[in-house]
Image (cartoon, rainbow, N blue to C red; front, side, top):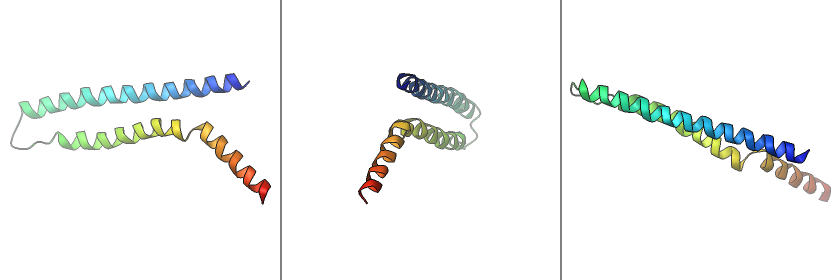
Length: 91
């Protein structure tokens, strides 16, 4: 039973990581296209920074959620629950 749970957790983490990589690839491709449009129609302002920055913030948050779940995932929650339960036993 425990192996099944570990497998499902690992599979979920891989799916989340795959989603992040797909997000990263689309970010790079779309923003490269936007940059090309800005360069080819340049009228004195570099406006491509606005979508680059806004979407970049979303990408960073997505990345943190994927990588933070590895550190603060189910295993971390279980360790903390056990630690609090042990602390309650001592008190």
